[in-house]
Length: 410
Image 1: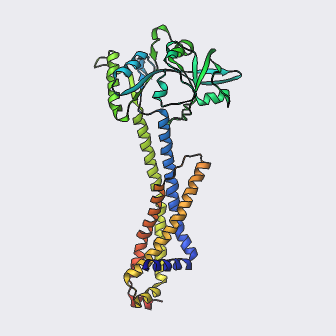
Image 2: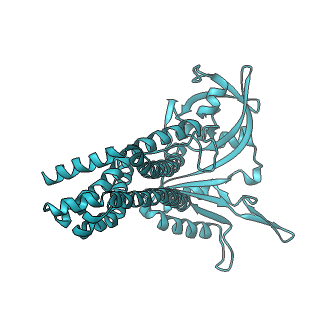
Image 3: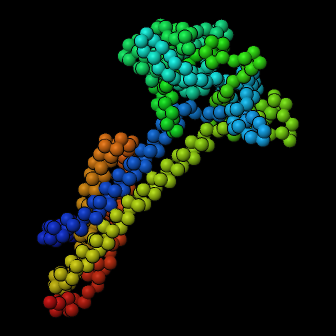
């Protein structure tokens, strides 16, 4: 009963000065709304990175060829062909913890269907590619080992290429030309989207590695077994460090490298790179939330100022209440409830502003935003804390007034 009576008194006091109460709450509204909107933007960015990481493939290692040196100049990784199909097969068979390994060749070519054409990436790969990249076939099927062994002229399209050549039409069974070589479309991959570095993963066509070498990309007899990249999929995230170490040891052994010689290949752990990007995203989210929280502090200072003014204006009222038996805790509770009520009402309005602001950011800025119940609870709890923290000093000042001096106050 005491609590309900105190709340009624607090609400009545706030209604007497509606404009002042509204202006006081404005700081909390802006602060809570800013916190929710900024955290939503940061969380949305983190979710987008997570989705892009998942689209690349899980538990993935990339093995790149070494660099060539000419006249003292190092050309960078990939300038020297040091990886072979046999390396990929050895990794898949001999390294514990490897689920699959796949050697690939990549080039760019014009693909033609009827009067439509499109310049795209041509990926020569093996049937294990779809498993390694966690990539499902949306229509048709993926090519099989017999297609690779027989250099069959079959192709699987990415969604971007399919839409560019066929629109909403059916691509399965159609004949397309890649560098004037006819290929039969046997499948269309599901949509992958962009990578974290902005590459469209759907702008690609997949053909058997042997077909790519002999019919499209072209290789000499001397380097017929070489591949540009080996992709390795580990069975779980826990074994990736061990797999990375074993792949290094195996390739050094296969390439007959002496202890004093540098690796003629590079193993990249994509999980480490993506983890760094996620950590950067989390840091940015915290930074945005910290900046927005300044508005909450400013709002809290506004509540303290207004409550001090209110205590001064109601000094005689405080004296009268004490004279008729009100205790210090009653006065303390009344003013504290007023401060918390201001904060909570401002917090509720701030939540609406934050949710609406996040929606507008998503629509007009085309950014991904994500609002979770935890974010709303945190913002609402912060508003309540601000009310208690900044309202305590004015409430305490009112509670410990001298009743006689309060009654004599003009």
